[in-house]
Image (cartoon, one colour):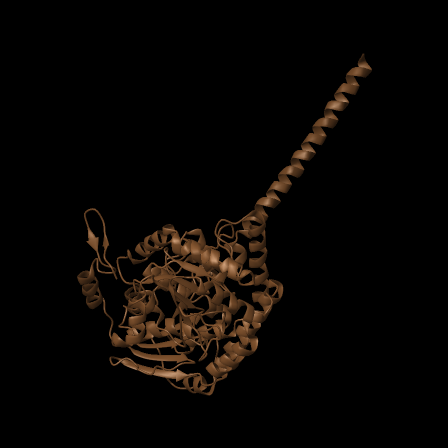
Length: 530
């Protein structure tokens, strides 16, 4: 990565105070702790985040256990690292992805999507708890100092912390939003923080703010009526002497957030929320020789196209696939396409295929001029890190929000999936490749990302060890977590004020009426005298 230079200084990413950081880590280091990580999602992008953190904790000398659908083929050589694998989860996930084929699905109405998503995640939570390998762990006599749980509507998994008598750390794969803010008492101003799936920017219209507010209260209703009671029952069913979910849900010592001001809009944070966006990114490695030569020899540059680890571009509908082929054929640039099949009928001569491609290392190559992506958060963070412009084709979830954000910041454009055609793709590709403002904005955004006092992964490790050193760090807990919801929202104060206002208004009306009667009587009395 290039250094960032100014008129009178030059710095390298994350090297502002390396000696000081190392000294602090040594001075404030903790003895080897037992740490459990729970990352049940079958999407590899989620596992990449959990694994990045747990591996480095093991390398720092901690005794690490990881519950996930994936296992480490090359576990850390330092420290202690153990996998508790959710066997069968990946195969089931791949089968469902193929059956579902999101490219052919109509966009589901949110009123149906929200409860469906709640049920799917609740079922996944129970499948994890019911897994034979997890049951063995639960019924062991082990204890852990810290339990790190990925947060994705799997509330009952937070009971691992109380069961194993450890401090709870929550890892959010998304930025701060209405799904997670309540867990640590963080405010959620609905006027400029949109729901994850709505795809709005922070500058919402009146109707968008109205829909955003209704969405928030709709989710809250689903949580109170269905989600929390179900997860409370799961805790009772699968954990001996399981506590009530209300005692577990809001008991996180800290929440690690996969976000940063360069990748997400700035929002309020309580002290227990810590930004670690980009902590999974590693220094570029040497590319395979054939791929290195392909990128090196692309004199006009390379357009990199990938829909991530979860979506398969080979499942694209024929008309959408052909639109990409026709638009790519018009480019003078070479195209590197993550394609999961052996062949691609009609492939232009400037297109190279790869079933698996080392995305971070590719984006680091100076000849990569543009990234065509589904705008998943990890892909978005990686392209910001490397300063590459984006053409986003969001498919769902937080991808619409991510795509809107990058378009607003001026380093990318968006083509919504229904609008994909040869014409729209060609127009967007031409604009992005020929207008230098997008590259300039991408490089500026990358500078924001790199300008940090401490690397995000070091920040994550520091705060996990901080929790160990300070017995759960209860001093970071905000008082709002201990208030009943009606007190937190000042409903009792509002009700009292409204009552006083009504009484005052009633008394005022009474006084006016009495005064009016008195005045009328006085006037009548005067008239009689006359």
